[in-house]
Length: 194
Image 1 (tube, rainbow, N blue to C red):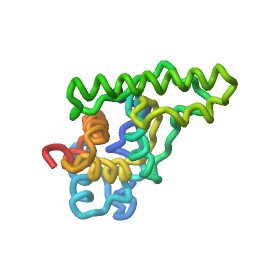
Image 2 (image 1 turned 180 degrees about the horizontal axis):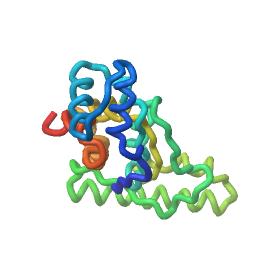
Image 3 (image 1 turned 180 degrees about the vertical axis):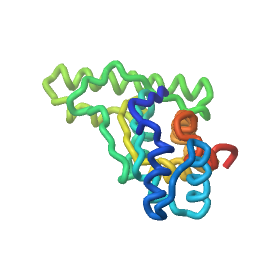
Image 4 (image 1 turned 135 degrees about the vertical axis):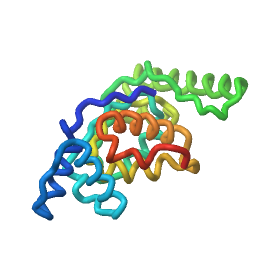
């Protein structure tokens, strides 16, 4: 899995604080003042001002199963690699950590068979959009996801939970790590064991 930040609102914390201060006609006194305000707003549950800042990530090497979970967050925007138009013969199978070597060997063999059948169907003139039906949900994919900071907090709160599926939890951890570098006051309360 590879998670890369494509773009993020510049000086996001300053923007969020500026927007928040509109409602009270107050003035900021620098970054620490902005961060203190943001922490207070989050503690009070006043997160609507977080919607003014956005982050976009490119995610590669997650399974379609993980992508299916992520795209349930409909306030976010997604562009996913199409199995209808893209030849996916070079894709890998994502390995769950619970698979023992024997399980993984069997899964890899089945995946190779599925890819072989996919190739055979294509060679017989079956359209990619139909041939893809033989590919497993564990096949790797890539996507771009954009969300405002309020939605990122929502996604991360849900997907960082210990009960979350392992792959989306790993994705959420990587996204959180990146967001903490750019807007720590917005996301710092989400780190740690959940």
